[in-house]
Image 1 (cartoon, rainbow over the protein chains, first blue to last red):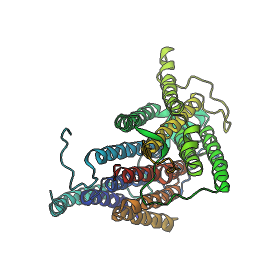
Image 2: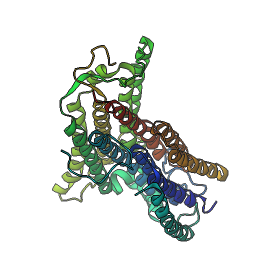
Image 3: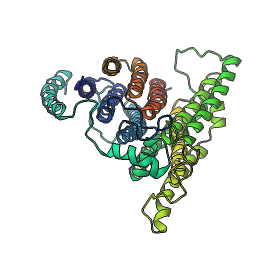
Image 4: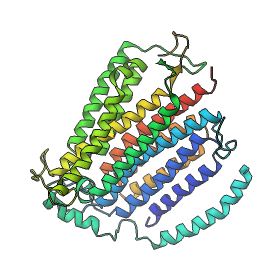
Length: 116
Length: 256
Length: 81
């Protein structure tokens, strides 16, 4: 249990990289990238977790009771929202690629050249 | 590069990655026993210093507020780039109705479903506003509430299709929301500077513990972020939906 | 508690792998939805309700929807006129 969370984070990163390398579709590749990203969420929240502690919100239990680390939660929270906007940017690029080249297959896409 | 060569190159890469990951995993502290003192210090000191009960909001909007300002500008940059990419190539050649994928049935909507979607869109939007407003007290805040409020726009499309969606959501208004929210955040950071304080310093009265107004400047920053996030995701949804319009000169009967 | 955390961690590992192994992008959208739900559950168990909120709204609604719209636009541009 002491290393399970870190192993899951590394597993998610590895799976995402494997998916990106073997992907045959640009949209599928973007989905794999989001798996990589979720690995970082698991790692960060795992670092902040403390056994027997509550959430860092002192509404029902008074300040001073043990609570988990709020700093990593703030990091993950903003990253989820910004990551979604980045995913949208990648999807827009994928749409442009499909409009210009007519394919989303990573095998058939060649380095960018100016189109006539 | 063929598929086989990619896999062959992946094997040494994974070997390196696995060694590094193993070294890092063995070096990390045991799960559930953190070594960091920053979070503990925030949990001990911030409730009395800032009169708020949600420590995540306190870190986001006050203690590490400058970081959030950076994240917010990243959000605005990403959304702007997406809009430029989508709009720039699209031009004005689309018709004013939604397109149809060839060979896909286009079922009519029942009145009950339209009504339920409109009702639930309102409820979801109000829930998003509620989450934003109570951000400094209970779980929630500008980022979550903004995303929830923006997801209510989708229900309008599900219920009514393209035309009501465009009637309700005006692109300049939503873009204005995004810009206004980001500008308000920047002003919150810059105005204390003009009076000789540090950027984002909490100069307003702190308010009451567990009250809707608790946390001083944090309340304004929270609402600004909520408005900006609602606008950002609204713009993204509008611009992506515009991509599904039918090309001009299509049969008038098509489209929903 | 220890079993709950272990179970949700393993569940998130499985759902992440499912996202990678659903090769058809149309099916992958639903895998992304499920992955978002599982991650939200994990964040909730790890005492992070704020993050779970944000993951539910963004990870299971907005991001899968953007994927769906992209796929619809790609399918419409596939046969130009």
